[in-house]
Image (cartoon, rainbow, N blue to C red; front, side):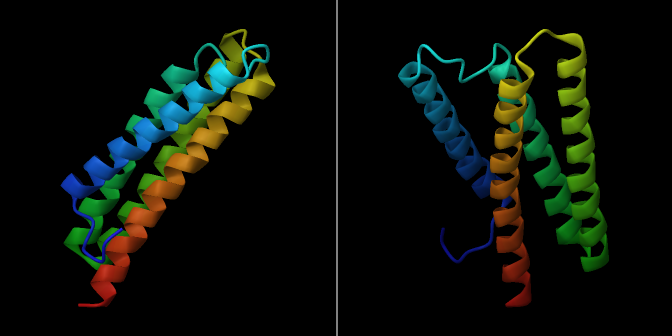
Amino acid sequence: MLKEEMTIARFTTLYVLYGILLALVAWGLERLFVKQEILTDIFWISFIFLFTLTYIAYVVSYVGVKKTPQTGVFAMMGGVILKLLFALSFALIVIMKLSVNQLVFALNYFSLYFLFTLFEVMCLLRNLRHQNNK
């Protein structure tokens, strides 16, 4: 990444590319391991849910950081905690209500959760680093 600030438009572009890359890797793994159950039946629903949830959490955090530093801290913590609560709620509902392979679902879901969160945190750190240099 370049040394410039991570705007919403820049984040959206990079995030969509990152999402496409993750989707291609998942699709490739599914094609590579045909005989094993690598992805659950609701993998793509989980993917879209986490993709959208992470985008919303980033936008909330970004807007908070742009207002004031104290608002930024609350916005980031709120975004991360709400994202975690919504993600855990979704996982709990799926495990309780649907008949899916729970181990495969948990591995799929939380690997996606951590990969999307990693990208979000890296972009937020880029913005915070940029603010410290001002």
